[in-house]
Length: 232
Image (cartoon, rainbow, N blue to C red; front, side, top):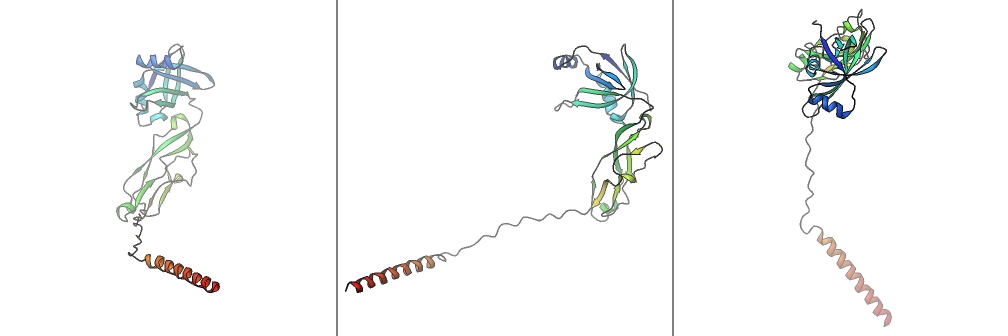
């Protein structure tokens, strides 16, 4: 692997205004911390960081951070902030690392091949998790894990403990039984049936109303007749 060197310059001014001025000047505000040392505010060349971020190892890349007047230290990109519209870097955090101390890192997982459960059985390949967490020395961090899914049939899966992990160098921190990718049958999509229209025939309700009216009328007439009879 090519040894990468990122040059940094200490910065005395902090805050949003100072950070904006740095960006306008073509520099990227950054902070270095870790390694049982005090944090240090610096500025770096944005392209130097972008080369690391878009490399095969990405933010897991271990490089040499050379701070003017402060010496050199192995480091990694620990965190970063992006401009939401343009996608450019706004800020980056560097972590000092000791090459003889183990780290916890997340490594991306990629699939290879076409599952037979998809090709022959009409299933769907679902990737549940795209990275796993491991513990290892900085120099042993893998760039990625690649798993072959060609033999996966319906309802078959690949779990974290199926990854090609060198136990002499890496310790798996993700749950060993965690499903990373599997093949499932497509979910049946039930078409929504339109609500059945209740058709009421014209005049169907009228006889009931009329009958009720007639009954009330007849009842009233009977009451009148009874009253008149009593009077007589």
